[in-house]
Image (tube, rainbow, N blue to C red; front, side):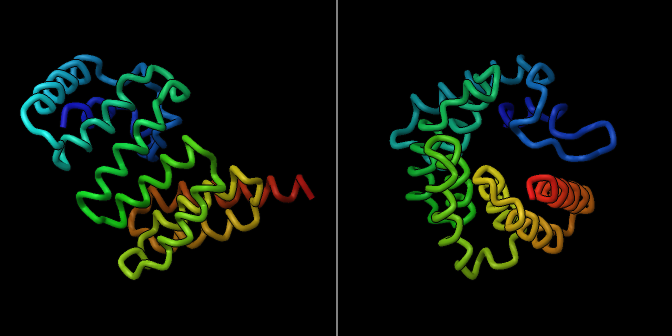
Length: 182
């Protein structure tokens, strides 16, 4: 909980808009909460083996917390932790999060095939983050037209007005960048 809470002040901008993890100002992360969270995680890891879902989730948060810059994040470790968490929970949402980590560790092509497979899961049919993640991967692959469509789909699925604004702004940016490229 402390590891997650440590990022609270960096998650939302001045107008209430969400700030994506990789765009957050990490100097705003609460170092005291991170230190306390890492201590609690260490104690939990010594108590139970194999790790349970909360310890695995905290371990993922710790990978983010100890990276002072986004590029220092140990994405291969995060993929391994998500592998264990998927095995334990069987959750398609956890699998989607794993796909994001795969993208960061091994590239968007590999992750896109995982997300395309997950998009067929009935449990995720109306989950706005599936097309949002797909859009991020398409942007990284330079496929802005497809990304724009996915961002618009994600915006239509979300009920959060701030997320909707962010998604539509990103869709507009894709359209503009696509127009420049053509």
